[in-house]
Length: 264
Image 1 (cartoon, rainbow, N blue to C red):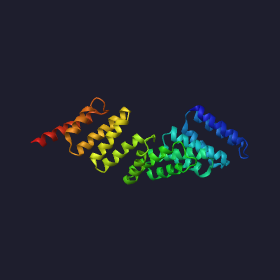
Image 2: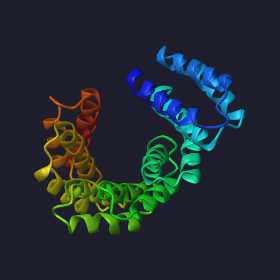
Image 3: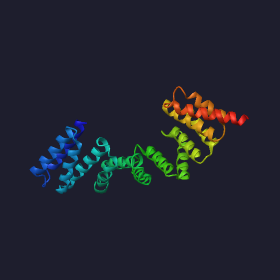
Image 4: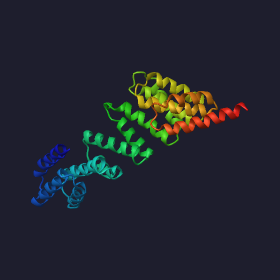
């Protein structure tokens, strides 16, 4: 971590030394901010960087500091949403595609994972998808757009995207698309269709934690569809691996009582 920040400030100083507004006072402030970062005193570093920005330094320095502030909030202070405005500064003021892509990717992730502002995550991912030549993470952006539509409850738009992925067996997110389609059908209460997609997913998935998670959802779908025996069997099979077995025991107890009541 210190190496990365030191590298950043070295570049910042080299660029800034050629700027007419890089005074000795500004130089000292940046070095002091770097010391705070090296000592992991990020709050003081942020405070000092903000003071530097108020001095209206050159655009080069302002850009570097905005990116530094964004990274501190995003990576080290666990205040990702606060990083958005600093990344936005980069997007609005820097023409370099590398800076644009790095900042847009962070903004998209923050809006999706932390702010839960899915319309903004879609906007950022769609901008990234417009870059020419096509960026290497294009398929991931497309998946995230679909997941964002799903989170917004716009299931038809999400289904359209995941169907497109399912028509591309070489797509790196081909397997995940089965899971996402299962979730769409589950939330639409199409239990049988959800189970169908999830079994296709399980044929291809190798991650044990994901397998357990999806098996639980299949059991839930069976239970919702009044297929109590099938639900009971899957819940029972998960007892050795499910992270919270008490939840399964409660489900099994409830299912057993319902099956007994049904036989009366």
